[in-house]
Every structure is written in structure tokens, then in C-alpha cells.
Image (cartoon, rainbow, N blue to C red; front, top):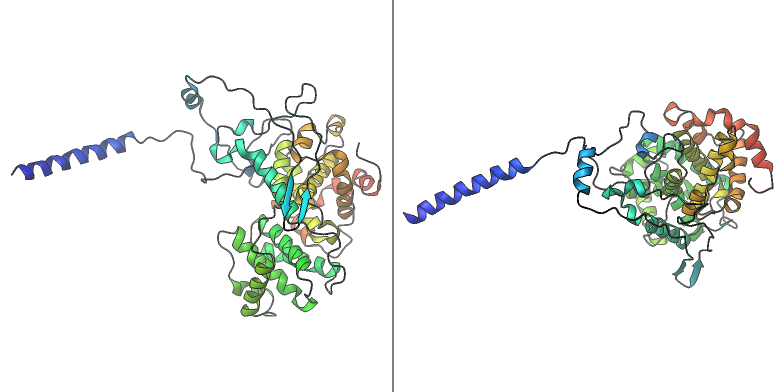
Amino acid sequence: MALRNRTALTNIVNQENVKNLKSSVTTIPGKTKRAALGEIGNKVNTLRGVEPIDRTSLLTKDSKKITVSKQIIKTSEKGIEKLPIQIVKPVKKITVSYENNVVSLPPKEVQSFSSDLLAVEDIDEEDKGNPSLVSIYSNDIYGYLRTLENMFPISKGYLDGQEVTPKMRSVLIDWLVEVHQQFHLMQETLYLTVATIDRFLQAFRSIDRKRLQLVGVTAMFIASKYEEMYSPDVNDFVYITDNAYSRIEILQMEMLIVKTLDYSFGRPLPLHFLRRYSKAGKALPIHHTMAKYFLEQSLVHYEMCHYPPSLIAAAAIYLAFLIIDNNDEDEHKIVWTNTLAHYSTYSKDDVFPVVRETASIIVNADKIKYQAVRKKYAQSKCMKISTRPELKSATIFAISTTDNKAI
């Protein structure tokens, strides 16, 4: 009898605990559900020179900025002393060892955040309250990405002596841009596809022209698995090639590419660095989208593939700032600010040669037969960037033909 009463009492206590637990759970007003992990450098301004906002405003017109109410901020900061200003350390020389070679990153003499006159803005200051952006590790993460891009370089002229020619590569990439649109894949998938093709063709030099398209669709198949949440089926890639290759051939080429690259697909993409530079330069959506147009045009052209992703991204945002802000003399004088130089680790003199090559490509974009990227960015969802008059201005023509350093 006593045991029976004890069991009943225990059940009553458990029920009360459950009720108390449910009543203690409250929702914070103004908060919306978001992904567990945010992107490190994903904030870009809508007004250049104003505080940064969420990068999603670049892609969607009706995006909403997630804010924390003042009441919550006061409650969380109660009894806590004000933290000192974070000092951004200048970039130091990094030495990377892999296999039998040693790759050294040259030191960049850039002003630090503690400078009085030429101060470098701490672009991660606004993100300290957002744990998903891990702002305390942002500089270390991008430093590691620069290390990776030096571990997996693409040599200049790597197609020399091969049956595959630069023209064949350009035709392939131009077609893959259309395939990428048809499958509605993420931007990163296209960049990783091109990087995989270049790295594989550089390492495996016996690919003939008949198997080049097979390499292209297989590289996109691998990149889709790496980047997409739901990647296209292998049969979709068989269909897109009009049954020129079988399912077995694609799977066999997949194994060959993966083994040749030693299962390493972590080479950073220009898009990763572009987002960081857009944040550092307080880019408008028009700047960011135009820089993406420059990057995708560079993917098609063989003469650009040997540049490090961080340098191509720096050149793209530099050119976007230069041609759009040219009418404003004050903006023109500070195109490449100390903040941009610090976070990119490149000076104006480092970036301008690549800017000149990019400008030459853009000037002749409507004269070549590779039109997939140009047609893509003529759509309204890409802000019709490829049709803007700035791309035909006297400024970009002057940049494409000059041999002088940047102003």
C-alpha cells in the first residue's frame, strides 16, 4: 500500500515539473528563425559609407534585417564593463610546406587598425553579438583560405603541349554556365566546377578533345555533391550531354578526378573573398553584382585562370568601384582604401595589372562568341549588369589600354 502511494506521488511531481518547464520557455520578440551557421563575410552595405547590413539584400529585394531590441541589449549588458576596442593585427608572412615544395606568401606592409591618420576600420565590430558569424575568428579563417589557395595553385600556361587547347576550354566553360543555369545550382558550384577542371587538366595531361566534355560534366557532378543540398542525379548529366556519355563513363571519370586530386576540393573560390572585400569596401548591391559579373567572365578566359582567387576577387571589386564611382571625385580618390588594402593584403599596385586584364575582357565581351555569362547578367534578376553604360564608358576603355599604375 505504501509503495502504491509513493508511485502516485512521484507521477504528480513529474507532471508539475513538466508544466513548469513549459511555462518557463519564452520566445524573444523580433527574433526570426535562421540557419545554425551563418556565413563569415556575408554582410554588404546598401549604401556605401553607411553601416553594413545583411548580404542577402544583394540577392533579394524584400530582405529584412534581423535586429535585436534595445531591451534585450540592456538586459544582456547589465553589470558588464565596456570591452576595449579590438586591435586588428597587420598581416604577417606565412610559410606553407606541402610535399617537397615550400610556398611563401610575401609580406604586405599595410597600416594597422591602431594607426591614427590612416586607420583601418574593424569591419567585424558589428558582428560581435552574432555568434553564427564567429567574427573573432574571421581574420584567421581568411588567412587560412589564402594558405589553401597557395597549396593548390594553377600554373600559367598549363595547357601547353596538351591536345586540349585554350579555345576548347573556353567553349566548355561557356556551355557549363548554361548548364549551371538550367539546373538552378548555387553560385559556388560553378566556381568549384571550373577550379576542378583546371586542376585536373593540369595534373592529368592525357585528356583528349573527345573526353573534354566528359571531364566538364563530371566536374560539375562532383561540385554539386560538394556544394548543393540536393545535387542533380547522374542521369541528368547523361541527358544534358544528349547521351554522348553513359552513366558508367561519368562514374568512372568521377573516380579518376577524385583520385587525381587526392580527394582535395577545398581550394577557396573567388566568391568567398569577394564577399569579404565587399564588406570591407562598403559596397552597394550594384558594385557587388558587377564584380560577380567580372568574376564569371574571368572564368571563361584561360589567361585568367592562373591568378589566385583572392587576387581576381580584389581586381573585380576594384574595377567595379572605379567605373561606377568615377563621376564622384571624392569616391575616385579613395577607391582602394586602407581598409580594403588591409583585409585583401593587396596594394593598388598589386591589383591594377589584373584590373587591366579584366577590363580588356569586358570591353570585348560583346565581340566574342562566348556569350553565356553576358546573357545571364542581362536578366533583371542580375540587375541587367551586362547592359549598363558604365561597361562602355571611356574610363574602362582607358583602363584596358593603359600601362600606367592606378591613380
